[in-house]
Image 1 (cartoon, rainbow, N blue to C red):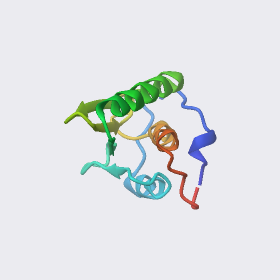
Image 2: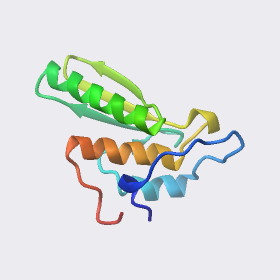
Image 3: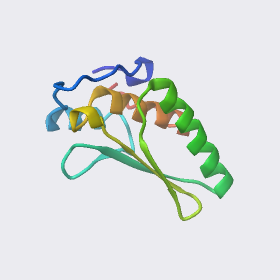
Length: 118
């Protein structure tokens, strides 16, 4: 399996097929804390912080990371210290390797190491 931490996102063209459910499940094993949406077209994770300033600081770091990868998650900061992150490759209507690259790098920012399966 690929080491998502060392990869860089690449643009997806229309016509590229989204990852099949089996591949999504395989990839989820190496990005702890992330889960697939019910339709397996997105992955999501919630981060909880000790205070509002920490939540906003992580939000900004993740925004910078996403911009550098050219792959942007949906970010929702709520209840003063919760950040919900949703990833999907909109151009293909589902998930691509890019979503897992950003998920792994978000985990790294959070301090979570990839699974030994990576």
